Length: 320
Image 1 (cartoon, rainbow, N blue to C red):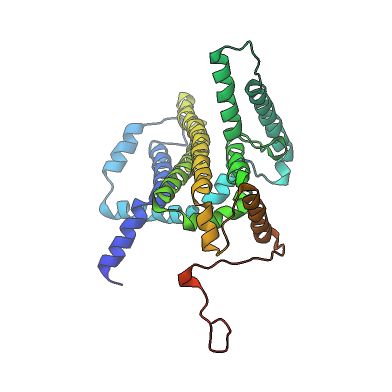
Image 2: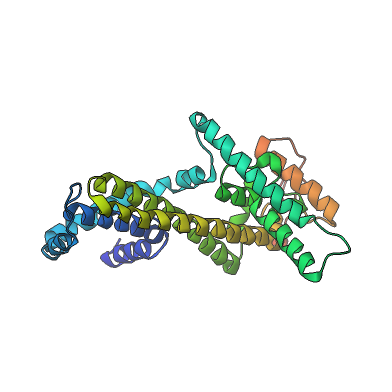
């Protein structure tokens, strides 16, 4: 591997998902905490000017050490992105079961309210009221799964709604089919899916990072009087980023649903399975395939090969 190749690989890493999702949030949190410490925290007297003067005195070695430390922290935390998303979805340990129950009850009330608004249709309604009911129905479909699958957080329910609806009309179970469908997506749609997934992960990471910054501010400035109000900034940012993450989850779900609409037959071709003649046949076939993937249920697959993929008969009549 040449130095040019190594350089290109490093540039790709720091220009892509790792840089956006892990490195930048870790760098922001590290600098924020360092500024507070250099300004005199924890303590009663806070001098932000002292932090600025300390930063101006950093030499090249100290800056390099800081960059390496942040890079190492980002590398260590990068594999934790999926558990972080699951945590914000509401998949919590058994010890938090009472808190989870409270969250589910709140989400149930929100869902019921939206469902009532979506189903409020009668002949006396105005055009504006009919449009509002339609909007409520769209939000209900995008933001909530069925009642028996509700999670305690808005983010969890937005992603659960995607799992419930994407491909369901064609018989597909999105949870088991998506890892097989993604590799056969066309380049334009895959770019959209990747962009929306990155946006989701960035907003989730920023929400968690800002919350950690707020918690660190409370811990460091608890004896600093009015300076403690600085914690309100990162905590407000955390809430804003979380709400943006919910919106990003909805957008990601729309992309996943579109992927099933446009590329489910490409998945069947990749599996060398015959294309269905109608919707009922398609649904039955998709359920069989998903049952096989999910539980190993026996299915008598009848394969259909393209001309270039058909087995070549051997002289004795067997396929090779």
